[in-house]
Length: 412
Image (cartoon, rainbow, N blue to C red; front, side):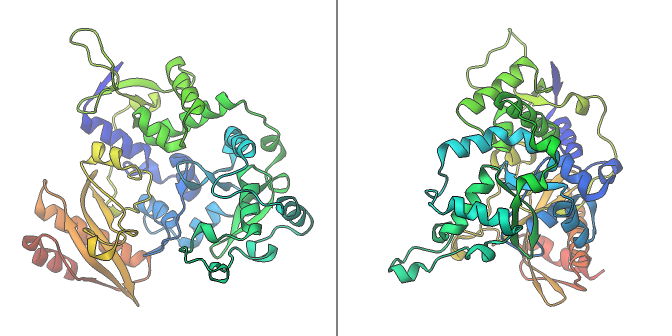
């Protein structure tokens, strides 16, 4: 078993995620997707949508059109499916999700009962596809017409939208392309290459394969981190455990100083207890190279799980977009700022014409205040340039002693 300090584990994680070392930029956006294993999608767009921010955070000022082409293109290189959440995942992972497609098929329910029109919708895609929800009758129904006051969201989906999403869940249709922000659905048999489509992977092998993907992406991870990455429970979580304990996942047990031990675990007298798993390739060499200084999407896989983020970076972070405005602490879409391999602060950004507005800037305690100010300035100016802004304006700084130094640094 390998013993790691918390700092060693953090640096391995940063390299695995593409934030440390020049090699992390090799291959551009397609390689980044394969490195991280899954890129979470979200409807919120501030500076850009989260899937764009993930590539930008690792690669710098990559063209936004290049990001779109890497995710949604013809022929397909990736598809949308459920991993940690709704994600873009590499096309070659299609067989690994067979267990999830079958589970949805057996359950025949996720957020809604599957409506009788599902077969009709499938035939429509077969005859006329690829199609958007607008082509098959629209995504939503008017809840007000039925007298309900329920808030809009996925509960007001039309029957055709429910049906097409169920067909996506079970793998009859697939989304590998979007028009604007609208999914384009087509038959899986027309889009997924036959060798992948016909690769019938047993459930346990699928979970094992995704556990391996998660371990490589995360670099060093607890069991809970791995479970959160691929979102398994019940018998599928048991399969993950079997894959770890048997060695089938390819991951090896490690002990990270300061990380919690598994409940009930005991080692020999004086011996540390394994409390995490690592990709053995990540342990073969010491992470070296230049750290990225960048804003991070709250949905970035480096920080998307709160307990892991606090364990690795000492940052307690919560997305406040759905928190009432008067109760927000850090802002609507506060983006952590990574510099020198650490989280040095947070920014709640917005755009006004060609000005990037930092509505709120906060600095984390510890480290050099002067270095943190320069890093914050660098991160803001690089992000501004990427989204086509020519000015940066700060509205509020949470640390009064650093407000003037930050404004001076931005002016330079």
